[in-house]
Image 1 (cartoon, rainbow, N blue to C red):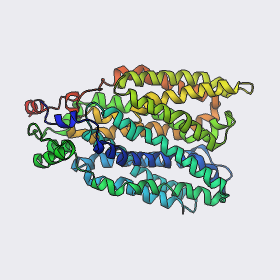
Image 2 (cartoon, rainbow, N blue to C red; image 1 turned 180 degrees about the vertical axis):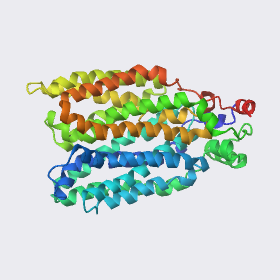
Image 3 (spheres, rainbow, N blue to C red; image 1 turned 30 degrees about the vertical axis):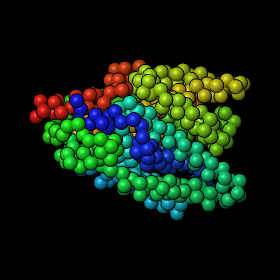
Image 4 (cartoon, one colour; image 1 turned 120 degrees about the horizontal axis):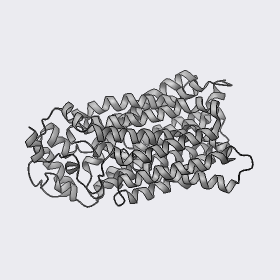
Amino acid sequence: MSSFEQLDEKPFSRFHLLAMFTTGMGVFTDGYDLSSIGLVLPLCLASFGVDHISGFQSGLLTGSALVGSVVGALLFGFLAQKGRKKFYGIDVGIMAVAAAAQAFAPNLWTLIAIRFVLGIGVGADYVLSPTIMAEHANRKDRGKKLALGFGAMWGVGAIFAALVLLLLEQLGVSPDLRWRIVLGFGTVPALSVLTLRRRMPETARYLARVEGNTAEAQRVIEGITGTAMVSAPITDRRAWRELLAKHARPVLGAALLWMVYDIVLYSGVLFGPSVIASGLHMTEVGFTLLTYAVLGTPATLIGCLLVDRAGRRALTAVGFGLCGLGLFGFAPLLGSASASPVALFVMFGVYNCALCLGPGAISGAGLLGVELAPTRIRSIAQAVTVVGGRIGAAIAAFVFPALLGVIGKSALMVALGGVSIFGAAITFFAVPETKGRSLEEINDDADDAIARAT
């Protein structure tokens, strides 16, 4: 019997709902911050008196936060080995300060530097939030809890960014002030959960397995479930380097899937409002609302309902496969002046919905990284998968604009379709199925397994 059986079997409760909100608002802020720069990019450049920027400069502006998130993920992945709660709240604090600072950026290079700092907070949140949420979660609902609290909230943040910009446009706010308000407003959702994050209890799994504080772990479990721990868990003294080597294959597989997902996702997030929107004859705001409010978020919610039923691997593979087919169909239409508007929207809808339905609800929720490593190294493993995703996003930020000028829109959509098909092909080889299994069962991390190893 698992030491953490009470946590695994506890029905979905008010505590789980509050944890979803507390962690989800960090991802809401991330979605707001990373998508808003694509919306206001032309306004920023006009405000700074920049008529034209190179593909590299465009990549720096849109991708500096992504590079910063690599730093944040690695730093806080190791820091979280000293405690999850100890650093929880620092992540959104960094995001709040950096978001506010964007509103006062005097030039392009200062804005790039500020967004790099913003990315450090984002990377930290991508490690801390899924780790804490997974370690508190029950077995039955762990997938949908992370998919709803982490995956779905990104798109909601992006929708909100578009609505803020639309409201400012309707109010007649000047273009220079408009982009500053949009970017600076990112501080509000970040600060909204700062207090809640500081009050979140340390996870029982961390307290028992890593810190060795069984008594405090008992109190946390009783507070969440109302029942006592069935047995005192063994503290895991195994070397984390040894455990990383043992679990390297599934962790790297999860990182690879997140990288593939982010290459496809961020190509649309960062450049869709300025590149794809014109092919659909839409404004930047209209395109963003179509992408997330009409298509993406509803599809992600459906994925949330299916993730604990269909399973992680099947949903990811089907999502990537349909996304690739949608992109292959969308590519020739995007470059054709005589293309049917209905066909354009259908193919774009297939690509967008499939990406959100499968990979978005799983890889985009940071689900696999926290499931595929034992508690002793979970935050480090999650950092590795986050870096995989951020590498994919950075590839989109820096390579997309360079390729666009060389091969054009249609060929670039075909290339992204190929990346999606690759993701579908490797899914069943990259990671094991984890639905309905406890974190200890997945990772051979029960008390008897730890005792044998030590």
